[in-house]
Image 1: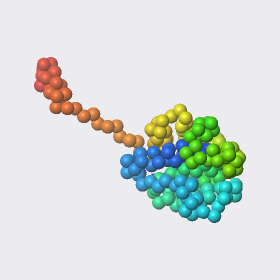
Image 2: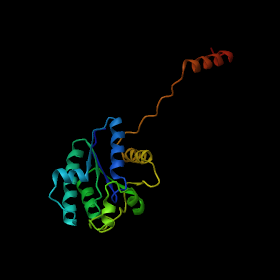
Image 3: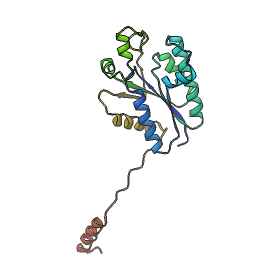
Image 4: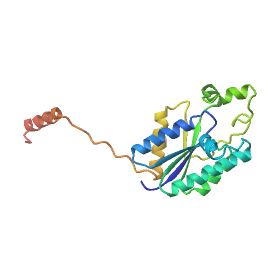
Length: 202
């Protein structure tokens, strides 16, 4: 596979974007694919520490993610972006700029995300410490036509990875995985030989 592509994992905080992206990355590497994972929080910290969380700042961060993803994909890399990109216009812009683009909606009910809350965002929001959480204080515009939907409150991480891999194969970004050849033991072979001999074939 020498065709680069971008998978954009979008969803509200704690929906499972990073978990899904890292799981798919591991599965792709097992298939010999060159992979890079861009986590929005890490990219923001390393490249955009001056940005806030208003729409214009989120817009700029997603522009940078789009630019990096486009460069990687153009050079044959599978780029997995884990970023809410909460406005459809952000994701539509990425789709228009990136030739091979897959939108993956990591769908999860808000109440489940609030229970998970690995970074404590929802707890801080409940205490009034922050007022910029997507899906609560700021809108999260759900995808209208994503290539794949992962329901992380119902599907296991393994099921989610399998669903994304199947989508990549269907879209032609990934060669279909060859079926594993059946392996017979010596005992099985002896049984078959005896049966064939009894039937007069050997």
